[in-house]
Image 1 (cartoon, protein in one colour):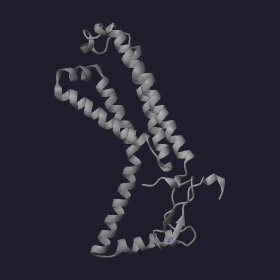
Image 2: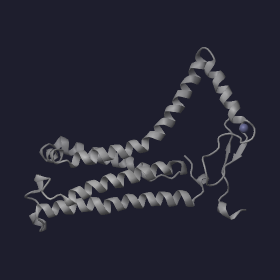
Image 3: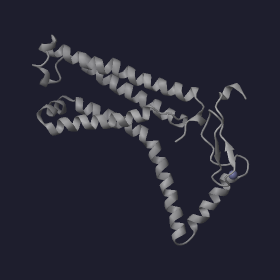
Image 4: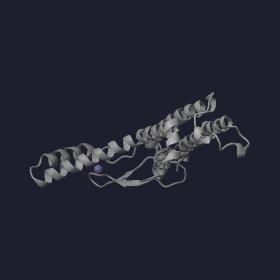
Length: 219
Ligand SMILES: [Zn+2]
């Protein structure tokens, strides 16, 4: 056995057309669905075209199946940028002084803030903790976008010369901090440890997918 493939047995999947076993290469590239040399991919494509052109229910089913597959693929491609964009939008929105203050005046807004931030953060982490090589690039881009936007927001809060969040005017003395120092500390926590965690997650995803053979991870 070659050293580069590690000591895992290679994964074998059936050809989607003829069912013959295909040995998946460990590592590079996407998984093969069809036999590489027997024209199965072209044959399967022709068959799908013929089925889609069939009149009646069978053709309708084939067209619906085709549409579903394309939607599934499109959704999988869209989820990483969507998660990063949604988290950025919500993080900035809820840290604007007015919406921030409003969460102290309304229980509904308070819980809306926490639940929307939590849900969007979970989506983002689902993307960041990617385990498949074909998802890695999108995960890394989502991580970079998040580090940039969260770093900017954290820096803006840390370096703001005046108080942004008046609900904390009277709450910080107990901790021995002026309201501005408290604001700077909050911004700094978002800026440095917050971004560091995302960077570590992205590096871990890179390490995990590069060190393990792609064939060992399946959906
Ligand atoms: Zn085949």
